[in-house]
Length: 224
Image 1 (cartoon, helix red, strand yellow):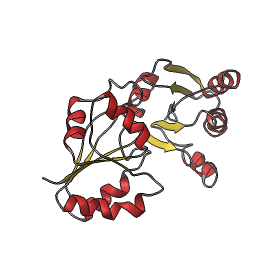
Image 2 (cartoon, one colour):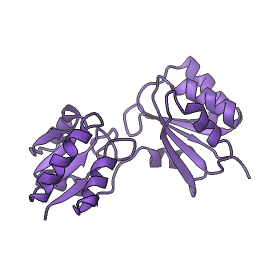
Image 3 (cartoon, one colour):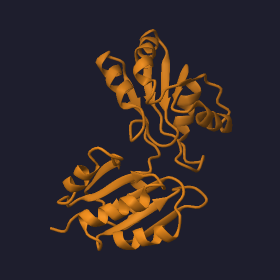
Image 4 (cartoon, one colour):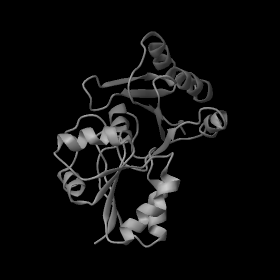
């Protein structure tokens, strides 16, 4: 049966992929990849020879219709991103929405995503949380921080190492320097780091120690 599969891929350690994900990637007619070079390394590791096609935020509006037509004609297609679950701060939403509108079955496999291990590892309350993804770099950035000042749930952000200190300092200004938080870096990789403290302490640390790699910030919500 023709279908669109959303297949999560490892966020670091190549062993963090499910047997089912490998089986799906082997069985489909086409794999849509955010970066074919990056996905090619994963496929080579698992001896998967399925054809690859580029599908990312810069071309998805141009290619989505053709991909859907291919599925409607009988092909099974899998969507992957460089790391983690498609649609979570990565391409995926557009093709899922378009597929649903066209009556194409969509199946999402469970698997890796950086926000959940970072949340659990933080030691902060995890029964209720909100995921903010990447903050706006310019327009709307201050408004986003202001909107979170009264948030009582644990808050999760993705961030670049180049903007980490700036973001921690801005969070301190809006939420308080003594607000508890954690920074998870390079999750599942050799140099994984999980550092906990107040926003002020974390900002001070990373001013002195240049961060590298993919980063997740977890911040405690406002106390009732």
